[in-house]
Image 1 (tube, rainbow, N blue to C red):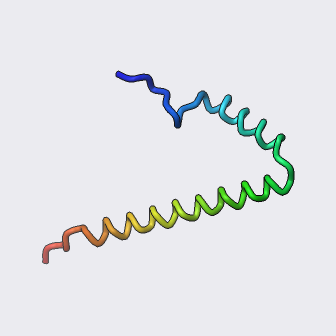
Image 2 (tube, rainbow, N blue to C red):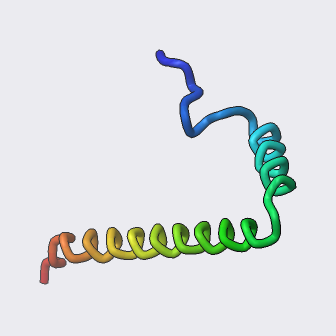
Length: 66
């Protein structure tokens, strides 16, 4: 079995949270606003993709028997 860590598992939740806090302290106000806007855009895109996947699954589901 391979290591459980990977690019998405950089460390425990606490250390990852501390890294994010450190980056926020380094950002100026304008950078923080741009970062927030980019994050919101990504979340919107992911939400749209999830909705499309659900619609596709529903469209591909067999029709119920009568």
